[in-house]
Image (cartoon, rainbow, N blue to C red; front, side):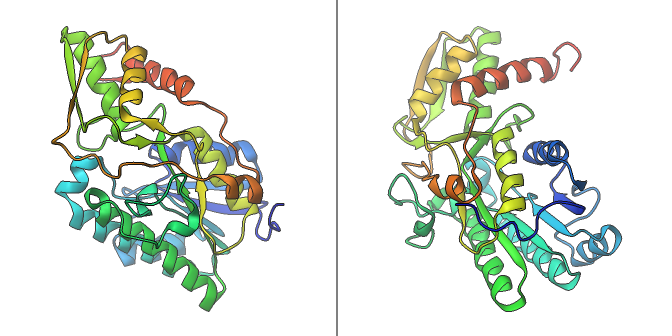
Amino acid sequence: MFQEDRAGLENARVVVTGGKGFLGSYVVEALVERGGAKVLPIDEHDFDLVSWSAVDRMYEEIRPTHVIHLAAAVGGIGANVERPGLFSYANTVMGAHVLEGARLHGVRKVTMIGTICVYPADAPTPIVETAMFQGFPAEATAAYGEAKRNLWVMGAAYRKQYGLDVIYLIPTNLFGPRDHFGESRSHVLPALIRRFEQAREDGLDEVVIWGDGTATREFLFAADAARGIVEATAKYSAAEPVNLGTGQEVTIRGLAEMTARACDFTGRLVFDATRPTGAQRRSLDVRRARETFGFEARVGLEEGLARTVAWYRAHRPGAPDS
């Protein structure tokens, strides 16, 4: 049974932080398609959310009724290992500023977006929301995960003390067209696509993949995630966090083989067990999202992968009309 639609989105003014980025662009589209709200996407060029004066100015100038907070300092495992201090600081400060500004400026609702990295490294799979504080996050992404996990604590505290309607969503690994494919920011799936495409074009006979291939992950198509975020913003109002995912688990080896086929790469896959892989297993229990605001994923991994490869081929540097 769905929660009461306490805030809704009719006649709302919705600021989407990070609204010009990968996931943000899909959230903006989902809001526009749903109708009823004025959608106001912003990015770091509009307002630097690490700066309190910029955040205060954003609230003064735009006067939103709702905020969907997507902006984050992110990257793949390599970036997390190299820049844990930046990821910890920037994500903590941005989230804190967004919440405090919302309180001071009378915002009706804030949707905070977490990450599957908030969960303990050894959380039983499928991971239920109550597992969040039953251990420490995986070491490679712990600084990022802890910063995002603390935003749930802050949101629940603001709900309790100030009555601010803060909800917290935990999407699994996202993918799709418009993803970040650069070496410094790409996550596992876009990184695999880039490397397989380059290897095929260069005529290489093997691609090296981090880890031994036995770790598992779950992937959610970005357009599906955006639809879930918008529906939760409209329909959900409670402190309890909610997972957004498919509930489908795939090994890194299986993912690599599927990606290689999608990229028409026929060479060998070589797994380097000396490189970090993060948590060994990752897949979410997605019942709460289905029961509270009716969310279920529509696009499967294989279909979404084919769409993503096609987009990458059309938009990578040097592609026709890119």
